[in-house]
Structure formats: structure tokens, C-alpha cells
Image (cartoon, rainbow, N blue to C red; front, side, top):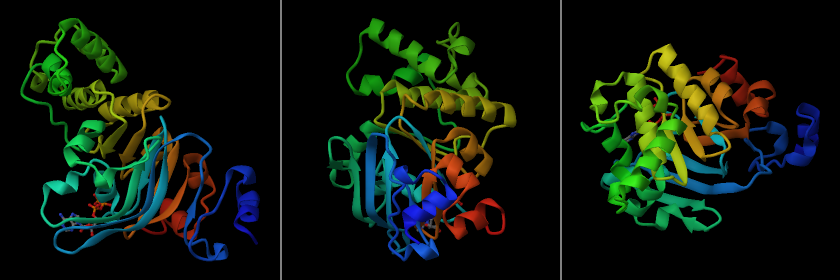
Amino acid sequence: MSANEMAENRIGQPAKMRAQSERPSETREHWYLEPEGTLRARVSNLKFWYGDGTQAIDDVSMPLVDKQVTALIGPSGCGKSTFLRCFNRMHDLYQGVKYSGSIKLLPEDENLIDLDPNIVRMRVGMVFQKPNPFPKSIYENVIAGLKIRGISKRGVLDEIVETSLRQAALWDEVKDRLDQPALSMSGGQQQRLCIARALAVQPEILLLDEPTSALDPIATAKIEDLINQLSGKVTVLIVTHNMQQAARISNYTSYMYLGKLIEYNETDSLFTRPMCQRTEDYITGRFG
Ligand SMILES: Nc1ncnc2c1ncn2[C@@H]1O[C@H](COP(=O)(O)OP(=O)(O)OP(=O)(O)O)[C@@H](O)[C@H]1O
């Protein structure tokens, strides 16, 4: 049976599907969807080694759809965070790391791996597990990246602060206390501030590394709402341990295992009609 026939059997959308498995399609060892939407990046045959020689990413290829949310899921140690951090060349802060393959930004067709890491970090924003606002005012936090880029006109800054805080669903809570210390906010508010700070510089891609893992359920729900609002506006790549969260907030999901990409699919398809046995085992809790 061809991969497309298989897709027809299982998904009923054969026209949209194109299997790109390196192994015979019958075994369904790997599967990825070639999405119809405009791409913001394409990862091809990416491999990554830490300085001690550990290979954490093994020949991963996948698209990143423009202005959509893509979730990375998989068991602990499968390489989700390592993969995410390749996108802003975070690893280059350490000695001896090695990449092969490419992460091409589109439509520019520039390989992130060949660019100056400092330039990459100006273009690709990141929010970490634990909120990390600067010990400055709320306003100063949002404009931090803008100042580095030489934007200093008060009117322009005011406008960007409001837009970014609105995008991060924080404006109504802080508009009357923008000069207050960011560290006086709750953990959930601090994390939304970090998202506002990242959005203020209009990143080409926004990376979120388990952004709710340090938050309570109410703060988590607010961040999930805000990520849902970003869908259609910003290209987001998010690592999450929580499969329900991936299902709630993402348009596309990648399932990784042992540094490899097992399945990349539309989120609804991956969670309801996975194409690979290993994905099914993971999402049904039989494995991991
Ligand atoms: N600094 C490092 N040096 C060497 N190996 C590392 C380093 N950081 C991570 N690794 C290894 O790389 C592999 C992938 O780790 P990574 O943290 O990316 O996985 P993960 O899927 O994000 O895990 P988790 O869900 O637990 O955060 C693991 O085998 C890990 O031990």
C-alpha cells in the first residue's frame, strides 16, 4: 500500500499528505506531513552534538509553518529542548558543539547554522521554563530589546509596549503600573511579561521552552489562551511535556524519540489518527 493510500485509509485527506519516510512506508517508522501553508523555516537532516560528543539530534527534517504554533513532544531526554535551542543557536554559548544539516529561514533561504549566532538571537526570540524578567520596571522589560536595536523615541516605545502587552494578554492588568518593578508581579504575570518582551522585537520565530512548567493551573491556562491568540500572527515552536497542552494549543505537532523525529503531523491528526505505531504507543501511554 502506498503512503498516500495509507493516509487515505487513516486520515481521509490524501491530497494534503505526502509521506517522506526513509524506510518502507508499510512499517510506518517515520512520517511527516508536507503542509500546505507558507513555511517560515525548513529543517533538513539536522544533527547536533554536545561538546562531550553526545549526539542529541539525529537527522531531523521538518517544516515550520508560518504564523502557526508547532509543538514538540516526546519522552524525557528525546532531544526536544536541544532541537529548540538549535533555532536560536543557544548551544553556541558552550565550547565544542557541532551541527550538520540546515535550518533554513524562508523565504530568505538563509541557513541559521551559518549565520552569526548574535544575529540569529536578534531574529529568533526565546522564552524559558522559569520566568526571567530583568530587575527593572515592567515598561523597561518590554523595551529592553528595542533599546539594543536603537529604538528610543518615546512615542514609538509607548506604542510597542502597549501592543506587546496586549498580545501577551497582560495590558489590562498592568497598564496603570508600568513603572512598577517586574519582580513584584506574580509568576504567571512575569512569564507573560517575558513573552511580551520577546514579542516586542517582532521575532521571526518565537521559541517557548516549557513556558508553563513552573506555573500553577490558572497561570498556565492564561498562557495557553495567549498562545492560542498568537496562532495566525506569530510563528511559534514550543516544547511541552504535557500532551494535553500540545493538543490544546498547537496547529502542528512533532513527536521525537531518541533524537529522531518519528512523526510530524497536524495536531488533530497526530492525536486522533497517528501514522506511526510509536506515536500511538506514546500518546496512549503505552510507552514513555
Ligand atoms: N549539556 C549537555 N551535554 C551533553 N549532553 C546533553 C546536554 N544537555 C542535554 N544532553 C543530552 O542530550 C539528550 C537530549 O536532551 P534534551 O534536554 O534535549 O531532551 P528533552 O527531550 O528536552 O528532555 P526533557 O523533556 O527531560 O527536558 C539527552 O540524552 C541529554 O542527556
